[in-house]
Image (tube, rainbow, N blue to C red; front, top):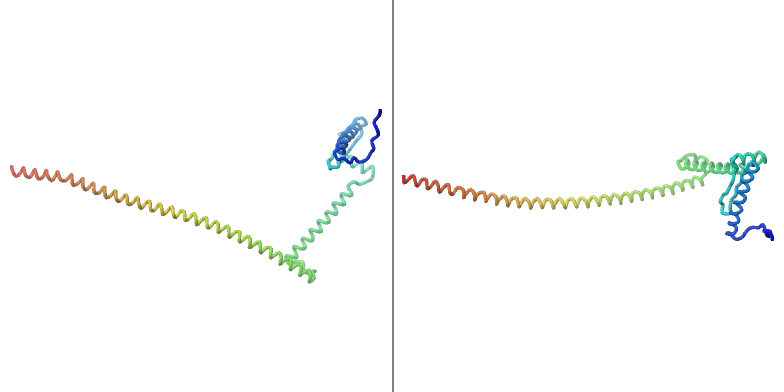
Length: 218
């Protein structure tokens, strides 16, 4: 029993549609390769899935660029004309925008004002005033930010200065206490030396007295 004929219509189920596309894509790629090998044909094939994924094949003996050029020569259709026109239109639009911006810049600098009427001059004046307002607000914001930063730095510097000053006072107090102790030790040392000298001189005086007494008896 042969296979039933498949009706050619869009597969509504996304999963089934993707599976069918994957299988048939492999098949048509294989057929393109067979044509290249068996018939020495130059084949170029491109496919885009519904999700935008590109799949392609080009005969090894040629390049895609050569295929396009031969196609244009045979058919007489310039496949780049539409793209060229689109790029030209984009270029013209960008040039027009650039010219307008250059003109606006010159007018904001006070140049090329001769062709403007009263309404245009009034609009330019209003735009300048708004720009000046924005610049002034930004300037005040920067000044306020810098002022806060300088205040923080000054506060930190004062804290460091206070800490160093406190350490200096503690160091001076410690030196003063050490000086008092040194003076006390000096007094004790002097007293000790004085007492030692007194004790050393008393035996000498007694010896002198004894010697004088002995001489008197002699």
